[in-house]
Length: 355
Ligand code: DAH
Image (cartoon, rainbow, N blue to C red):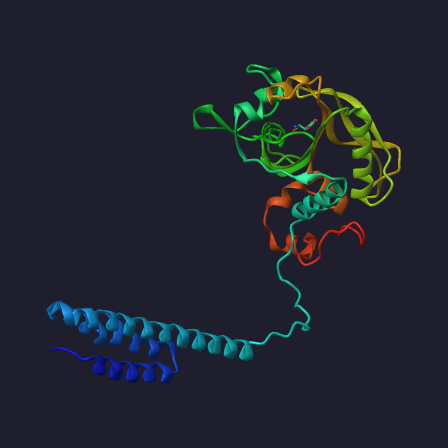
């Protein structure tokens, strides 16, 4: 069967009217399939081209292509119109009242999350950013690069969990994030690294999984005075009161000199008051980054210096918010979480109080 140009015009007029009248996306698609689908009216006409004489083909080929593209254009235009109408209808019917108060959330923020958030707020105010590293570490990042050579006795004190024929470990501290940061980032560096840490140790004051926040500053001309200033400012901001501190010499393989920082406190019945009193409590380890650690990360100790610190988050959370037993922290008891947890919609903020 052969067609004339007049036939094509009739088909165009008819299908364009159908497209115009389509009032659903599905209806429009049915029209498309009936006209331009594999077995559609126009597609079948195009198939007829093969049987035409060369002269006929010269006329009908472009005409059919023009018809096809006119129909496609009309379908696209109609589709956009229908889609816009559907969106308008949805917007009109699905209104949201932004002035309605939010109901009390049923979940709470775990005190460990809250305290890590508070620490991030305090340190970011001092120009630190947050870095992260993997829980599963290798010997190089967890020990060797931190100046614990193979066989070093300090390795034994870490009660390490080993994985996969001893090549990988669950990180025993957040200090490996120092190494990853110094290898991947050029000084000046100012980071804190909060995260989970693991040691094969379990009693009233130890859980096999616990949390630390590491700190690292690397730049030119960094000295012990910077370390003391940052940590003194940090504890007073964290406990939200003036806190008296002392630094005691200590030893860590990755810092030299090394120190532990104690805060002054007193007991008040069962409660512990941080800030004043006659007793001292150790809360963190710190020191100047050891030249061997800088070298292991490709930094020249004659050019760059830095300090580092590390603290246990769980114990600081207990001290600040009066939780009596470490093991309750990870027992996932909803009553404990309801009591000690924090409102997840309230963000820690230095100006309005941290919690
Ligand atoms: N990594 C140490 C630990 O887990 C804590 C620590 C001490 C971290 C001194 C430091 C530091 O960055 O300078 O016991």
